[in-house]
Image (cartoon, rainbow, N blue to C red; front, top):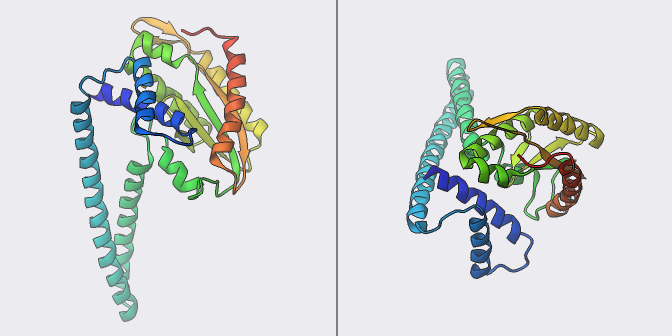
Length: 272
């Protein structure tokens, strides 16, 4: 089930990225796009109903747990607020200390909830929800200034086809950890596509230097799968953004540079 779920996530992300550029998407168009990527990844949809049921059960369980924890935290906040009002009114120092302890405990619980909502399950990088909640407004425009890097793995489909999706998952985790070493604000944007968000204080030349250094370090390593060695690399493109800029346009600008970079890097390496 887990392997099917991982594959479904990859196919879903690829289908979603494709249809995001379409003005109109009908159910049949989406089904056609999804089937295309499913075929490319050799994902069997024969047991779709069973797989969907299991995924739905998982998601419902997660949402129920999330709802329960949120309700618990809301009740705790209500009680703590009442105690704080009483403590301030009565100038009760002991009660105020209790309120401080309870508030700190509540803050930790909220941070745990944010971790589960904002992080990619496989790579533990941030996810799209985190990106949209922290950088994007309802009009899909940036709310702050910065620099965006889009990163795409080279020959990732070949790695999956040759070594299997379990190795593919390990590769994604490895790459994610390398990228987080460059900048903590790393987002898994698609199947094998990541975004790094640099603060406005980081110049494009410095970001490119750091990405190149990480890529060269990765290229110098020989990774092993099933007693076979292979190399790994990624391509990247950079685009600055300002508050009010369109997310789609910034990503498109970075994408163009990334594909130019991919042409150059593939002149150096030839798959696995």
